[in-house]
Image (cartoon, rainbow, N blue to C red; front, side, top):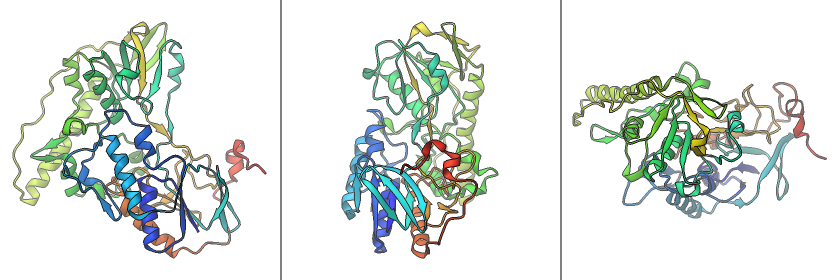
Length: 423
């Protein structure tokens, strides 16, 4: 029997392929199908990727707006309909709490009892535990603080000015949401890159897919580990899709700062890197346009010319501090930590990342699916998870369960003594 842990798009894609091959399996989902999209997104959330990229094994977007961007509620419906289309052996509301190798089988301790499996696919993605920096502890208790996964709308925060920390996709979109609601927003700008929503008559992501960017192997880069840690380019699918231009927000009253440094003496202090961070984000966006121009020329395509972006605002000497007394709430858009402590099989590197080759680990019968940049840029996204699942099901079909496991170093309880398996 094969156990699949996680019932999101990755786990369901794996189940579809397993069912096609007639392989007995079960899918454990801690919550419900679509949980991440239902419960960890804000009210105005929309996909950044176009609807036509929503394609899973045996199922694809078939609505009347392929170039649009689904809101969160429609993503949930899409996944629910996908599950209904092939009726996977899904166990919703069952959490896998521990996984270890015992003899020739895997033992999974779940909230519904202990089960064994010959092979296991971990399809829980790479965004598990909200990353809240220790600086959050320095704000007074009177200032409410939420992680981006907890943010819903401006109406759920107390009245007043809001500090948003982080300018990845979530931070920029939440800052825009607050800004459009009429809030005074203070935004700590980090080093995340940006991309234009459209260029030369097409969505930028459509160009990138045609250019093969989604197929680029992570190992084609000089440092795969570094690539996997990169922030995604910020843009939005809201309102039919558009650029997010932080400089324009500044002309409309949003206050921009460099990276947050400290909270002390009643002041929030920031680094002096605002101009550099804005310039670098613009340079990435323009570099993508350069690549598209080169592709159009090389392929002999006809595409409308487009005037390049000109900055609408440049910072002078940015403010280095902000009185805490002015802040009514803080939104931390600071990403997530991986949390695989429940897996008591030593297949992780020193940073806790699972060591694998296209999802196949060094432990026979243990696989990962849905990790960001697992194999290509499309891995972990609707656009690429199907291909990764198809690759793994071929490995699973050929796999012969070994008599034991070759331990990489130490034992699970030496690495995580607090996770001693209870008798």
